[in-house]
Length: 460
Image 1 (cartoon, rainbow, N blue to C red):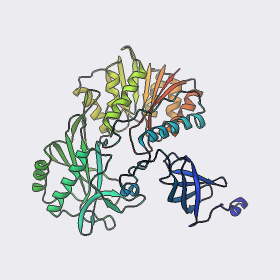
Image 2: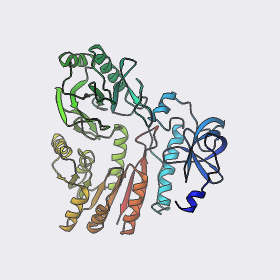
Image 3: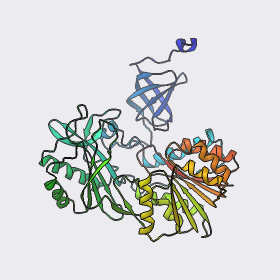
Image 4: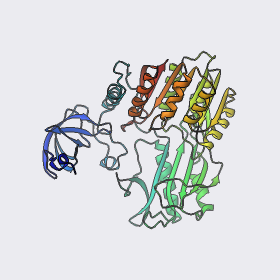
């Protein structure tokens, strides 16, 4: 143990109560108070507030406090809908006004542009928010457990697997919330056994519901431990009678003792393993496993920005890396000469091809493979593109992918990001390689949470 570590003594004591002013929010939305330059993270506190808090954890570089009293309140503070939502972490920013949330998200993007990307001069526009920042999620996956002898649906308490029963999730489409309660009640009627995680016994593990925002079509997925679901001959007609918009009922079997929700085995109980929704006037077939943006109206805002930044004339060759089931690809294809989509998940590529066919789009070609491998291959072959669109997962772009971009030198690049920190890291590399970041447009896809999506335009 180094001498420094041994001698480190925090200026606060565990379980003691202190007073302090909140000077900042972390990227997760926790309030930051400082005592003798030592930062303490306090959930539920807002910038500018003077609060009383109890220290619950002391670490070498920061401590954690629990808010006990607000002495001086922020004008941005709003009434919390219900304490339960704070316990579950589904709406970590619910105590911050929506205007305040949008300002916080903009500053998050600005901070990383300055500190990580070292690009303080790139304009970051105001976040495009929603008129109603609730009821937006078009998909829900709800755990099922036994509580007080009853089959219950709800949400886990933060950092645990204790289920808190909940019927109104606030951020989900209310029709989905109703459907979950309906399915729960049918399961109770037939004494379906809820899953017991500790012993890996019982049967019904999760209820998933997805609903088309534009179509109203619904899909119900019952995740069970065993293929047996008794009495399925009564359960299915009951669901269809109670929920006439259900076009698909799927049983997904997951026998493993695991945190992963879905298993490999699929039994279609009604219809096919698909429902439909629209995005920017294109129709998509979505299976129970497909990735589809959970906030349809804001996804349309996001993709419209991509199209606006692209300024396509109809003559361009475009590459859409991380193309999924083709949501951005089809929007680009409408305005470009030729679009190439890259996607690592094979069933998603099958879906994407079907979706192109479904919409009569013929100028799209899909390639199965990891985006970094395919890009490297293509750049070696001397292929080029007028526009490259990337929409990577939270971890951002692979180094090999960035190298391939710098070899291929597409004239324009649009980076759709769901994580400002990895976006900033990647922009620094691209700028170093000869690109100029022109502008960043953040879009609020997940109101009441600290997540923020953005669209960045780069040119060579």
